[in-house]
Length: 450
Image (cartoon, rainbow, N blue to C red; front, side, top):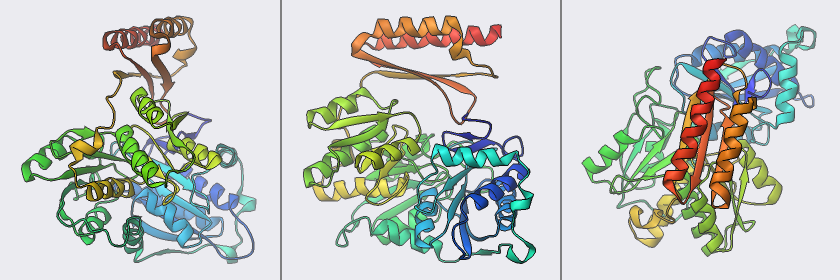
């Protein structure tokens, strides 16, 4: 965690436990509201959420804090994270708030904040807000006659659906395609099937019955087995799996094979490069993306820019260097011609556009490169800093030496869960497995000793 509250993607944790309590959510609302007071106009916030039971608690707490800071709150209800980012700009709001723990189970929740430009907040602004959370800021809050109001806003789903549809050429129709879309019982359970149907596709929607507890439960982009089965069952042309807040996507081809974020980026980058649309001479991804993607792009004389993990850092690098395609292997795909953050539906529409233009099945289009053998294992920790322990450092250094220049090693703490992630890749799969297992064993032994 960066500081005491914010991680790699906002604030996240077990609902009703620190830091995801109603009290902290209210104070985040106060601090964020005070941080974005600009000018004398009525300040406004757009506030969306996914379908978790705890969303009701966090939503009401944040409304209290934001209204106390003098902000008018527009309540959007369950809606994708990228829709919140879009509506910040569309409704000229000062802040966007998304209450979601993304792909995590229902018992977790989180708070993601967007600035008036629709982009996630920088580390500096998050640190400023974080610094206010444990201080007495009551004197800075609004007077009795300056309190904010809150109201439900109608029509926001339609706005987002129209926005998503406009990312395709006006003349393009998805007629003739049978699509299975898995909405993970999450925020896109209404908008994704509707957008695809309006574009002309035959749509089979699954996991579109949220009950507060089933978000991401054995479904969605992190559990695509059900989607693979359904694609086979209905003989679909493609399967689309979103996560709980629909900012990431995984594709399933007509044979049931999974297409991850690296392959999706490769497909879109190649298509945009051929049409002259790709900006900046490359793609931005994280240290977790497969070496095969880097080699594939190199074959087209394109560069893969790597950042630390987190789609926010991908976007920051894209903005700083003028690139318009970026993302993560996990399925966060950022297409800055359209969006300021990852958008699972819009990314899927770009894949569908490639299918329609080329008239070829997904299995032929999506296998752009042979992935280099890669292995990722997670080690759960109870606390402490095992990566700073001497035995762990020695094991990591030994692994780097064994892999040499033909491989890569990435070890990092998760920003959203109490885990150490150990990833290695290289052309020798047995060596990759050996170095990962050796590091995991040492971390586990260090954790046990502590």
